[in-house]
Image (cartoon, rainbow, N blue to C red; front, side, top):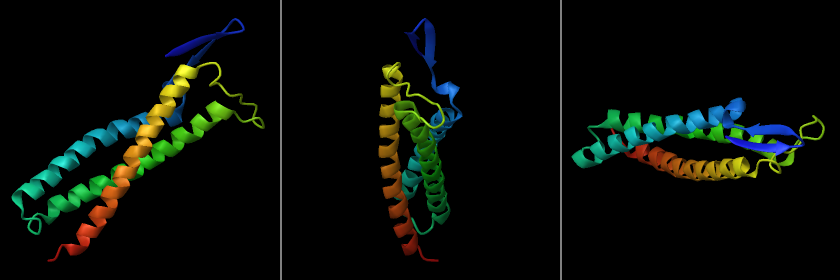
Amino acid sequence: MTRKQVLFLGLDARYTYSPSMKFFAYANIIGCPSSVVSLFLVLICCYKKHLHSNKYFFTCSSMIWYFVFGLLVAGCAAATSIGYVGKYGQKHSGWNPICNFVPKFCHKATLSLTLSYIAIMFYLCLTIISANQSRHITK
């Protein structure tokens, strides 16, 4: 929680106040364990070295990557839109920027969005690799 006094008014900034930021947090909470599960599925397939006989595990790990990739992209897009309004405001709607008053919250949000976009780039690479590898699996 970040609390700031502005003209005798207490200004709170929490991620729970915005449904978009909550969705962003939940998307990352879901993405982390599913990444670990997917990693174990891939390690099992690679350890056995029978990728052609383990099509089911390979398909499951690919589906987990696709799902997590889409979830992370949606969460980051939602949080980025709210972060933009928080940083620059929206004059036509009467929303003023709040980052001048609660910079600690804005720095944390910026850092978490940056790390999530890095994770999206990794998932994009995994998705491309997975799609390329799925072409080589034969019956």
